[in-house]
Length: 206
Length: 225
Image (tube, rainbow over all chains, first blue to last red; front, side, top):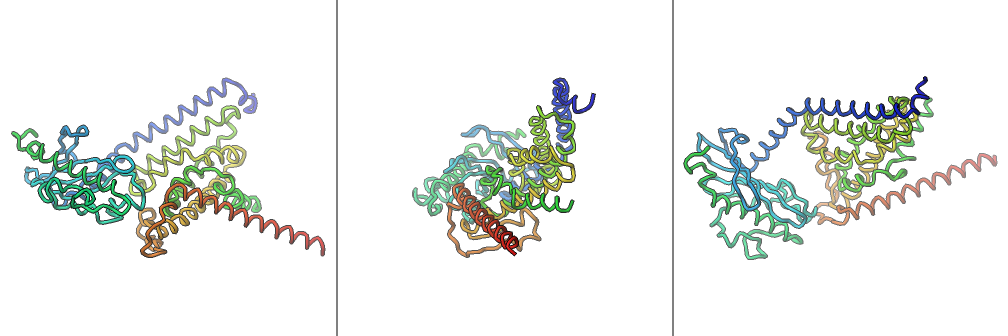
């Protein structure tokens, strides 16, 4: 029987589909095996890089493996801890606020004194040209948080100027910075509340 | 023989352009062309997949029954895209961070299946490779033009952030066309994409009609003499 005739047979088509599915699945499984370790390493390097942005200074521990999970207002918060000579000097965690278009996810670093070391937006869907000034590539606004803590400005001043606070809003976009300010403020309140646990001072359970 | 290759190239680049003649792949086109750099990234990633998928499908075309060809092509293309996605993520991670978004979108690009069905399933491997390359380059050129127009009107720049995609050596491409431009948001948002695609489509029609008119004019004169 020639290939021409064979191609019209039902059993050939079934075998063909099965064969293609088997081959492609095998290829994918093999590729997944081959790339898994490299992808993990690359993603860990990415994470390290993004953590380093909000964590100026030198630390001597492996951040990615020194984590603690704490209950926060919006579910569990994974906290990375940076140590120097065994002592927790700073912590890094994610906070999220409501923007104009969905959640704005930020990563923030806080020193053991409770000061903001840095904030970066890692995910948002705000309007390009208006709300995206929260990205450091577009505007310097996000650096306004550096060095601030609860008390400077005082708690009730942690808001955009329109709401009586100290942080600038953008022309045409108030909801976006409002969401970020609220998220960072929430992050600091969380830090104050869980301070002893985060800094590993509640009986040293590490 | 050369005539045939020239025709394949002309078809891919202009006459049968993916966006402006076949009107395929409009979803990724409108989604990513908010800047020329994004258009270029999407275009290059698609070109690579199109070339590979055309070659693979052309080389198995005798084995595949007509009745089940569509699912076979879809599975092959989806696998190919996933393989490209995984290997870029693992071994070219910097590039992946820029292109990652586009690669997943290629799966929904009907132009790939369109070329598999319309060309690669009926043609030899070399022809199909050339067709994939030319269709991809035509697609890339369309996206860069659409993205460029939207970027100039929308944010006053051209090829902003090109160094992220192509490396620091290409930073010279980044130009600010209008300094201190306040931005024209409509062009960056999806409606601007529709408008630009519509206007460019009209422009291509005008050019094609003029060329056809001139060609028939020349032919008539040749006949008269």
